[in-house]
Image (cartoon, rainbow, N blue to C red; front, side, top):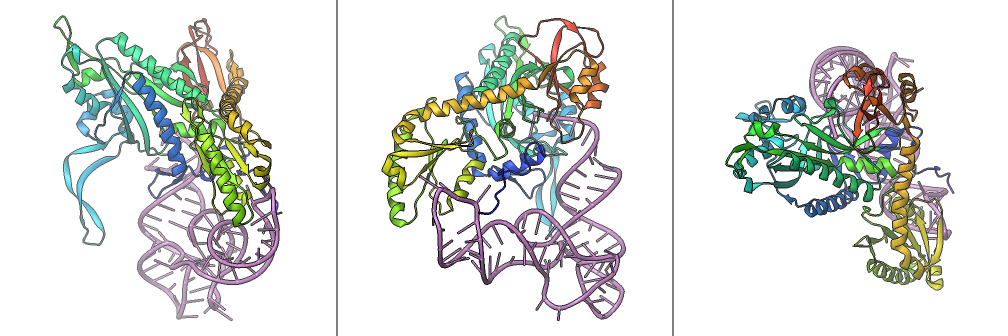
Length: 502
RNA sequence: CGGGCUGUAGCGCAGCCUGGUUAGCGCGUUUGACUGGGGGUCAAAAGGUCGGAGGUUCGAAUCCUCUCAGCCCGACCA
């Protein structure tokens, strides 16, 4: 027996959180870096996870009346110039296509040729190209509302990238809707942030706070930005989804007008909303531990993996047959409306290694079945959320598997909620605020969510910059109590969540 | 775009300062044996234009010049 490390992932979360995060991604086979700067390769296990997220979200979008469509990857540069704030927000991180052909270089290799008359931007988001299209589609109030979503990739030329959290290219969905009235557009914005919160909490088992962004943190060009904010295990905040009320800013810039019932020509009201593969990063940092990825059963690509145990070929056949029948019985069961997802791992790999393979990949339940179990009619069950395995009867396991998954799903949510509660504080003075966010050293896990009254964000800027803290959001619920700003002492109507953020 | 660092086997590194036989090590990989409710043991093997170009030298991974790429620290961000 060689001395195995105590944890499958090194370093541990408390030793070096950012490095732990990278190692989990690697150990769980979710993704790897690519030859292309700032871009990642999403591997099958990671992509299956994303597909499960997509499917659930897509069903929710359809259920709220949206349809999918697809718009071009390229946006003429002039389109981006139309909305002033929008340009300013995205111009610095755009990939620009200036040529359409390659030709041999006299010194060898290739060089771009055929300069484009107007450069094309690789979409950093699609408000402008979609808006230009909507301008043609919208003529009458009878054309409204337009409720469309697109699944796509976008490119933002970020300086510093981290897998899933911030990559130069990422996958996402962006909803773009057009409405006849402000009220209707605002209702849409709220509906979609609620959909995201529902998904985060009930599928990802990740508690989130719904709130609105302050002007400085708003989406460029938006009148109001709603977001869901989650706390990661290092106590930092992660913005997990946004929904924007764009008012008439984009419709004015792009001439999205319709003729109302009274015959009057009016500018339409638009919204946009999106979540991205960043959610995979959020999932990793919400639940995973020092042995690797931990997946909520509802999104796990495989919910139960069966590990057949045998010594020789004759046993192998018997065990495999037995295990196939367990799989079939389990697949006939369902969990929250979907058939159970079961895998058998029959690879020719040593038992211990095989077990750890699935631990690191976050499979919720491991089922170990060998000749002795067949005799006794039992199975050996390992839960990803508990260190110890235990035996139980085959029939009991099968009958209770959905309940077990449900218990695990809720357990993950409660554990994450508890972490958030333990690290959220009501803070009323600037010195307490400083103490809360000051770290004795960089790697120390510290801080959390500070819940504070504030009057205006501008006067807080030096303090926040100093502490590297940002205003995450002004929570929408339970936020009517007036008070005084923790820093300036001015009268304040609302509290905000302050935190260090990704 | 400013400051610091690194490019040597699939991955992680040593060697460089003080040039000198076939460039090492750990992990991983392959094969065999032992083992068998466990990421084990032993043995063998495969795998490298030392980031690229030029220069100094009898001789360069090692010294010099240029170049490319990546990482970290600052301003921006789903």
